[in-house]
Amino acid sequence: MARPDKAAAVAELTEDFRTANATVLTEYRGLSVTLMKQLRRNLGSTTKYSVVKNTLTKIAAKEAGVDVPSELLKGPSAVAFIKGDPIDAAKSLRDFAKENPFLVIKGGIYEGKSVTAAEIFKLADLESREVLLAKLAGAMKASLAKAVRTIDALRIKKEAGEAPAAPAAAPVVEAVVEAPVADAVAETPAADAAPEVVAEVVAEVIVEDIEAPQAAEEKE
Image 1 (cartoon, rainbow, N blue to C red):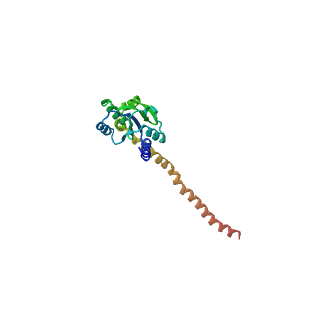
Image 2: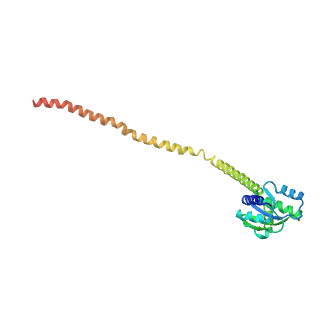
Image 3: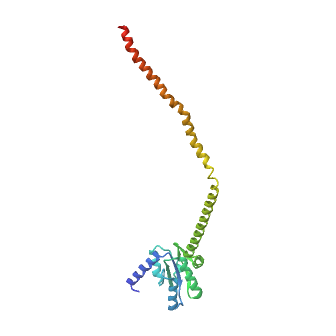
């Protein structure tokens, strides 16, 4: 491979390492072109499966800041750069390897750490993100339905308990109304007495006005 081609290959691999959620290194010796195409179809568009040169892969991994164990870069290698759900890709690789023993899973990188083939198989046994989300949605729907039933039951119970108590509220209103009326009645005499007091004061003033001129005439 010419130097410009090597540089381009390293740059592409470096970008693949940087953008992948996980990578799985495999040995593909014995797989036909037809089987390789079938494997790529099984992995889907979110996983890039590439036959690589170990030396270039080692350089690219280093430039991407990914630590790939040297034992994974021995023999014919092909790398699955997983940009989708790692669990789904692990399932596809595991199932294909079971049907086609020529595909050997050597190990990989997951969450920034190197993992063995056994750990990749354990990852494949987990439920995928879509399944977990579906279960979560089902659980939330069931919880919401239960909450609605509980609220309805409490509302019905409250309405049933308040119904007979409604007539008993009438005496309370009457008591509140009667109190100001009684006070008003009690205060009425005091209000009526006010004009009498005013009349007496006016009479005294009138008498004083009449007597004052008479007293002045007697002195003269």
